[in-house]
Structures are given as structure tokens and as C-alpha cells.
Length: 89
Image 1 (spheres, helix red, strand yellow):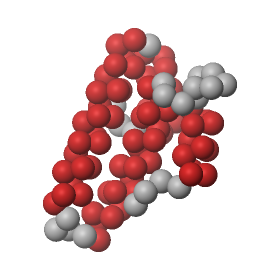
Image 2 (spheres, one colour):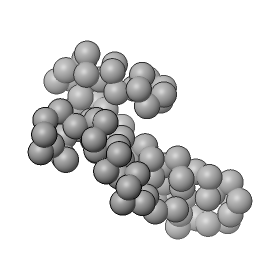
Image 3 (spheres, one colour):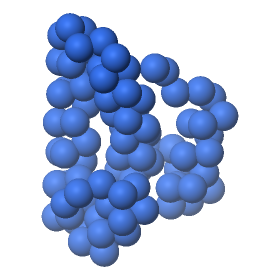
Image 4 (spheres, rainbow, N blue to C red):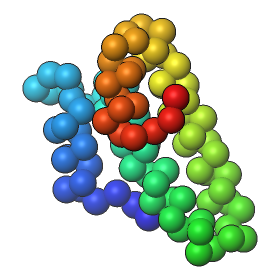
């Protein structure tokens, strides 16, 4: 359910905007998407995990806020991120 260190470094490396960038909106969205996908798989097998479901909804809301910010600030970066991650608009 947690993201491994190697997977996190791989996501940061592919979505970072500069050499030392680890906190840009793109990186945060990619990390949240990875966590959302793993938690979604967990909830498919554990249907009564309501605390996990609440955490999932909070992560989805946080990702939505970051995507709205990115769309407002830089629409071309927004379109690039959603296309690369394969998420809906």
C-alpha cells in the first residue's frame, strides 16, 4: 500500500521540472496518483475498510486541488500531466 523508495525516486525523476525539484505540482500529482492507485487496489479486496476509503477521498481531493491550480497557472503543463498519468479531466 505504501510507495517504495525506488518507485518514488522514479516518479520524481520523470516529473521534475529542474534538477533539485521534488515538490512541484507535477511531482505531487504523480506521487498522489501512485498512492491513489495502490489504495484503490487495496479497497477492492477490503470492501469494509472505511478509514482507508476516507483517506482515499482526501487524497483524491488534494490531487484535484493541485490539478485545478496547475490548470489555472499553466494549461499546457496540466494537459501534459493528465496525459502522461492517464487520468481523466
